[in-house]
Image 1 (spheres, rainbow, N blue to C red):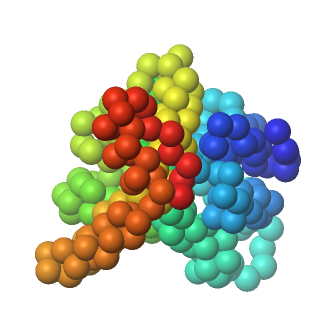
Image 2: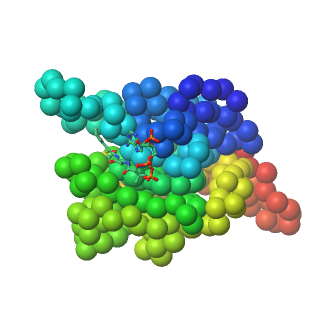
Length: 264
Ligand code: LHQ
């Protein structure tokens, strides 16, 4: 395991596990943690040994969003430019997660508040401990839901639920988040890491190219017409059909044995 102080990073079985690690602050983001997370996700792009990512948090929380102690208004000075903070820190990481053509599993081990919740929603498959909750905490401090929150909440939940969560900052328990389709599953706390790990390992052993194309197609579908999407599926299937993993998948099926995908 390699360790930056604020994001632990470990590669095993094709899974790059990134653990947010400021547990005494519920893994809220300071500049160092922002940069370390971005570096971790960038490594997932660059390193062909990484075939899936597992994102989680150390301690009792997943992530409480921005470290509010970093910009204490009692210290005086000009108001901070939070737009610049988003441009410099949150948005590049969000874009990297969405653009990564490998699956990103998120194991929400405890409270996910503010940008912490919305980073989870940007991941591909989200499992949460039943004791976890998601809080759009922004309204409590006069901010708007950032880190893609207004986008993902309105798309996934529709306006009525998105607005109620964002305007009230009411905590959404993990099981309700799963019922609403905001996350994949809520699981017993004791089982969370085993289940998330098993899922990530199985995805890492999958046909990475095809999984990456699938992720991209599903993400892009919302902004395309059916006609455009049918063309995009054609192009992607053409690419997948030329992959070594397609040949292996079909061969394994015909030979009645498990496929051994290489990600190519
Ligand atoms: C924290 C935090 C935290 C520092 C817990 N910071 N210490 C913002 C601005 C800039 C640019 C653009 O984007 C953003 C995006 C955002 O994310 S804005 C939203 C920021 N986050 C919040 O407003 C959430 C603040 N935290 C909370 O409301 C609670 O801590 C939650 C509901 C998450 C958890 O409550 P509890 O389970 O009761 O834990 P706690 O409040 O006792 O927290 C434990 C410790 O963690 C505590 O420290 P202490 O030294 O007293 O033990 C907190 O101060 C610290 N902590 N969140 N965001």
